[in-house]
Image 1 (spheres, rainbow, N blue to C red):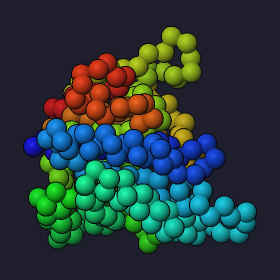
Image 2 (spheres, rainbow, N blue to C red; image 1 turned 90 degrees about the vertical axis):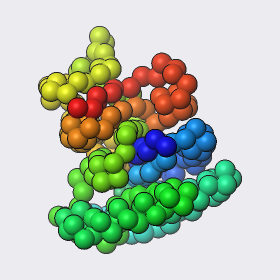
Image 3 (cartoon, rainbow, N blue to C red; image 1 turned 180 degrees about the vertical axis):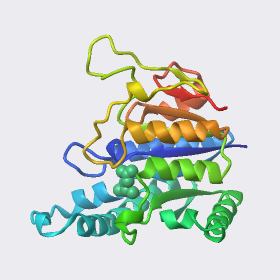
Image 4 (cartoon, rainbow, N blue to C red; image 1 turned 90 degrees about the horizontal axis):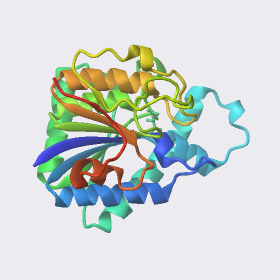
Length: 257
Ligand code: GLU
């Protein structure tokens, strides 16, 4: 079996009005189900807890809550909603899922790291798809992952996957501002290539990551021997096209060392 990690960003799973895009979520699940049938073992790293909690609660007075309070409240509600949706959609494919909530400190101690690794291996050996997110509700702000891009990179390396796919709201890394005419998508980044000068610093409004952290994660993960693909998660069949059909789907491939 080929083992892969798929990271889905908040911007992929959130509608314009801030609510959880269940249609998109269901389409990602359908694609993962096809990958499973084709011999892929999948670890899903999914964002969207905070965004979906915010969309769910519709609080008009969140200015009374500080950013930590908002994150704790929204993620507590949103993670429950998110995992329930995944559970239901995967069940339709007769696939089992399990929730793994983690914190940055889990990666600092060898004991915690091994514990997490063993837990996810047991899940995979028993046909259960791990769905990983940061435990935002209890994470201490100063000690958080930069974002789920960083988390997905740590998981990919810890679980020795063949490939990491980072799905966001953009096709990949461009050689400038994608809004500027003449800017083109970079298809391949080879080991040793420097891409810093191309990276745009704007971020989506719903997620914590951005191209900077995606590229930092992608470079680090590729240099540890894992292929990394950045692609647009809102594109129809992006995962199955990238991995199975050979269709020409726009992406940036960070080639493994
Ligand atoms: N863990 C956060 C969530 O699920 C997302 C962090 C990020 O945007 O990378 O809402």
